[in-house]
Image (cartoon, rainbow, N blue to C red; front, side):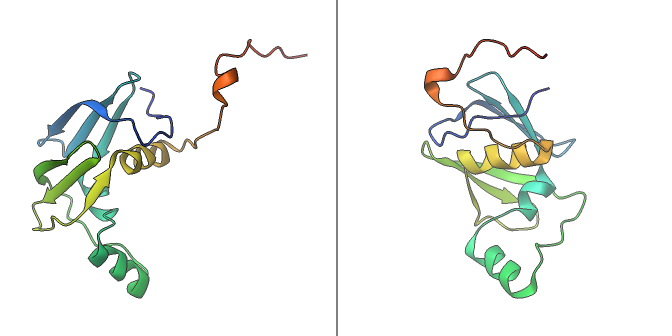
Length: 127
C-alpha cells in the first residue's frame, strides 16, 4: 500500500484506527493513502521537551518495550494528536505533518516538490 503523503500541514486523516492487538495506529488520509505506524515507533520518536532533552544530552531516543501500546489518543483541535502510552508517557504532541513525515521516512520515500501548475504532466518517454 502506498504510504506517501503530500507535504501539506493542512492535511488531516479521515479515519484514525488504533489496532491494539498488533500495536499499530492506522491513519487513512484524504488522498486515499494509509499510514500504519507502530506504537513503539511513535513513542521512540516523541518530540516533547523531555524526550528532546534526553536525545540532546544522551544522543539516543528512549528504549521501548515490544509490548508498549497506546493507552489513549486525544485530538489537539485540527492540528494533530496527543498520544498517551502504556509506559505512562503522555506529553508528546504529534502534528499531522509530523505523522506524515514519520510514514514517509518509514517507507523510505522522500517528498518531491511538484509545482501545482504541472501537477499532472504528460507521461515521460524514454529514448
